[in-house]
Image (cartoon, rainbow, N blue to C red; front, side, top):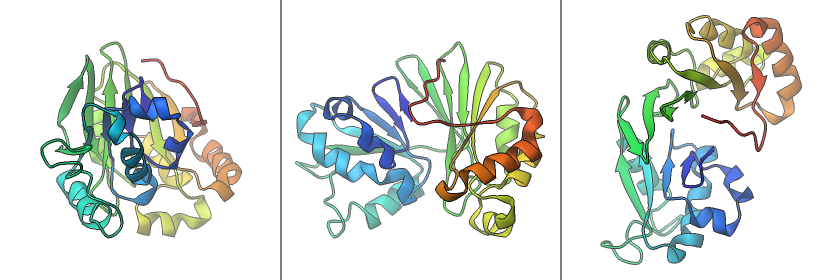
Length: 234
């Protein structure tokens, strides 16, 4: 997700849709977790625009996520360590550790890490413009801690939540710590706020089936599928 022109929430393959100029304007990247579909564009992006920028791109993530990226991506074997290039004092990339519950304010926009429940350390994010809020669940399974936070957000407008598997693959959803439609319905029953609900992380070969099952299991919450290039106003 691109917030205004300068903040990315995760950085998967969709980042490649941005132009070179758009990439060069991104100052901050907030990472939910270390899985490849959420970080894959960071190495290419930093390599491409690092020399065009006066300041480093700042990557915000949990310490465990930063450690994974250092050890397994920016390790000189898979990709150069851009936190040391061109120099350690003036690199193309800087890491900023964050914790669950921590709020970062950037030009009157508040971004807070919220709880997620996945197979690696993971967070979601609460984006607050001051007028309204959007919550992105990140990759998660059953997650009571998230709803305790969400239900306290008085200006909640949008909720983006994952549903990775159809119901016949519920066991796989449980093992991999994702949601399926029946589990989504159980989670949405914990929501005490009014919000527009959008579904993300649908498996490409099962989109129609999964959305049909969501309608059957959770239709009363009126969830819709998140679309490419969809714009939200906060």
